[in-house]
Image (cartoon, rainbow, N blue to C red):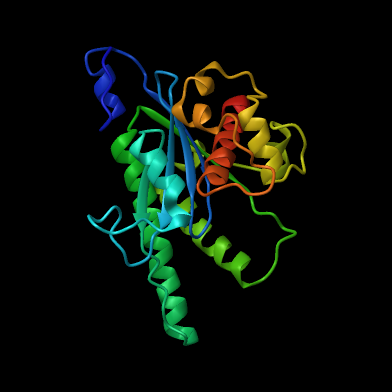
Length: 238
């Protein structure tokens, strides 16, 4: 079988095989991460990131330091990256809320569009992490709103039966404990606590080896690591 980056279905065009795709998504407003397992058992790590009103990798323009890991990993084909611009600029309540609704729809369309274009299959199962109800504040309300747009877009594309939402503690337990923080999750990923041979073959896992994530984890590593464990929660539930 040959593989095609543009559409996993191409790998099986001549074969009578059911193409199973599993997707784990760690959603946030500025840096959603995803981990996709295709029918060949390979992982594909994806970052969607708010890059503002700039052009990614524009000739002659230096990439901001906050996005240095994005560039390094994307240049090495360890991850796929898709920048976007959150156009929420108004200071007035009514137009700002309208901008948020439009923004939520745009991000959801981008993500589902990428999934459906690159990883189309006969059956696609998607998982998200549920809300942490201990959180509060306006940013948490925004996350709920944006996340709901994404859930609706995923349901419209893949059906409600193929969407799973897991408790945060359930996902974290796969890394070792139900209240694991970002640093614990990163260490669990580095140590391959799930003894995942497919993970150890990835460029991203190899890149993470030997790095100290005890104090700071560069974007988008933490988001993608969470997406990986969300994916594993999905696989363990099937």
